[in-house]
Length: 166
Image (cartoon, rainbow, N blue to C red; front, top):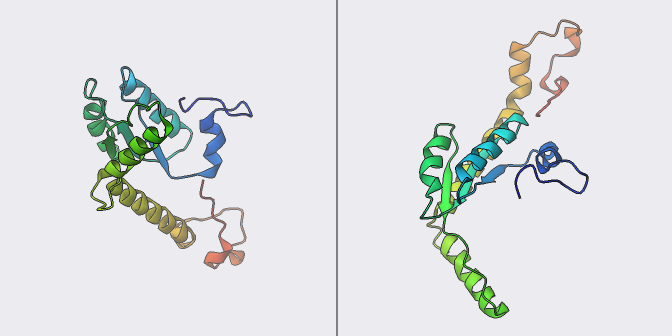
């Protein structure tokens, strides 16, 4: 399913989740046509006001989409991480659980030596930056904005400034 997949209300997922303003990791397509669909999804998100913090791709050694998409998104300040795809489903549920657990241990090891941890650190930096931006808005507003139809005597303190984050 893509970013334009419908929700139960009939709107697209993009429109449904946008008011929540979550940190956003775009899961790109690693298969044939994946470069185009990943970029189209990214652009649709940007048009709706999303801030895409990172892109995640499963490695496909045949198409190697991450090789094109990494520099494309780097130009836009967005890191791309690629990981091995999950294993094929095992017919035995216990065997499937074991394979899945091993897969997760491989991509998220206890040593924390994995590209996933780099993306998590990047998401933390993005979050801290966003919080700082919101917290400094009132002071910056008072220092730089003139409201032509407002009694300036009523807007003297940072607490007098209403913040609109999105």
